[in-house]
Image: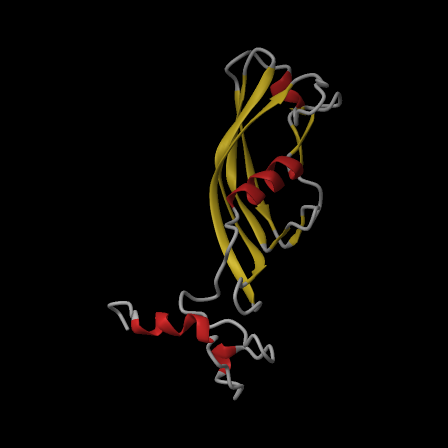
Length: 168
């Protein structure tokens, strides 16, 4: 994926309140730090304020992840609201992620989009709600059928067999 770089120099020199819409339509690619996307789609509106550009919009994407139980690949669709401020001149505050428009009038969306995707990705993704996972003995994917391993319940947990959930 090419760098998500947009020329916004005209908006930087425009009066306060001026607007511009960026259209995202990107194919598969890597945003860095292990964040890969199948696509990025959406519109981001930029509004010129006194010392920054305010970006807001809705972004849709799909990311490849692994099922937390069986480790099979899962295509996870995500849609999130994107809101970020981009300073018109570089600002350096230690420990802060501050985005700025470059001196030559470019806006880079790669890092802020990557961060939003990371924040909106659930910690546990399942391939299906009733995923059976992997056999703890041999590692066979139990969604594909039983593996034949004999699993004995630890006798210390045997009393719990008397308790059944209402759905069982």
